[in-house]
Image (cartoon, rainbow, N blue to C red; front, side):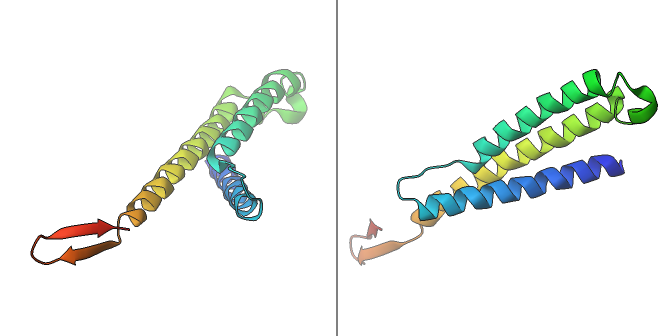
Length: 121
């Protein structure tokens, strides 16, 4: 369980780093539209594939040295940590997009008290 939590926290730290780097690039480079959630999901899926290759090809050949890392349950814990971090990335994106859309509709100018018309900004 502690390995799962460590894997999850390290993946979430990597997610925060990728989101911050993409946000910084989008701010500094005009016209750039990097999506940090998609980039993190691609990185996590590549890491999951490499982890599977290490677990079932490399670590499986040397059981006496890497026995705890070559089991299927250890790989399942690591893959769950990857998938939960990807779900967190897309959830973060959805929440951030909803906050951005909601903030755009917050400012309304009331033009006339008689006609009750509004001018959205």
